[in-house]
Length: 273
Image 1 (tube, helix red, strand yellow):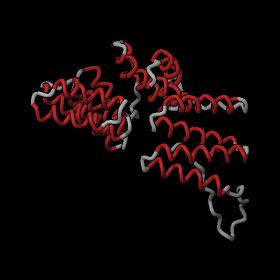
Image 2: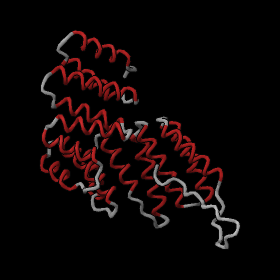
Image 3: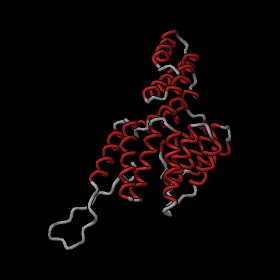
Image 4: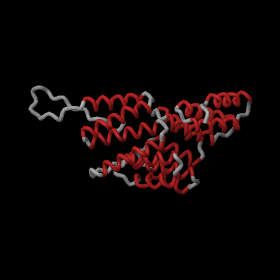
C-alpha cells in the first residue's frame, strides 16, 4: 500500500541525535492489519482496518496519517469492487486535505479508475488527463494508461495511439503490452500482458488481458477457452457481472459440447444477479 506508516529508526544508546516523536501503537497496528488483509486478497476486511486507522489518524489530527489511511481505504474499496464507495472516500479525503492546504493527486487516480469502472467515461478521462501532467512519472503513466483504455472503449484510435506513445520508458511493462495489443490486435501481446499482470498479482488486470487475447484469437475454440479462463478469474474475485458476460461469450463461441458444458456449469455456479 502507499507508503504506509514510516517506521521510526531506533537510535543506538550512545547516540546524541534527538529522537523522533513516539509511535502511535494503535495506528500502526490498524495499518498493519489492513496491509496484511489486503495482501491476503481480503479487501473488505482491509477496508475495515483502514477505516479504523483513518478514525485513529483523525483522533491524532495527523494530516500525513489521514492521507495514507484514507488512500488505503479507497484502494481497498476499489479492490473489493465497490467503485462508488471508493469514489466517495477519495473525494471526501481530497476535500478534507484541501482544507489543510494539501493536494494529493493519488486520490485523483482512484476517482478516475472508479468512474471508469462505473462507465462514466468522459468524467474519468477528464481526471486522467490531469494526471498525465503530474511530476511523478508513475502517476503520469497511470493516467495515460487509463486514457488509453477509455479511448479504446469508445473507438478513439487516435487517442489510443497517443496514450500508447506517451508512456514513459519506466512505465509498467504490462500496461505497455496491453495498449500495444489493443492498437495492433496482437494476441501474443495481450497474452504477454496477462502473464506480466499475473506475476504482479494483478488478477483483475490479468483477466482483462485474457479476455482481450480472446478477441484476437484466430479460432473460436481458442477464443472460448480464453473467455472461460478470464471469467473464472473474475468470478473468483467476486466480479460476477463481468464473469457472466465472458461466460456467455465463451458459450457462444464454444465449438464443442464439452466446452459449452464447462461454460454452462460455471454460469450456474455464479450468484444470482
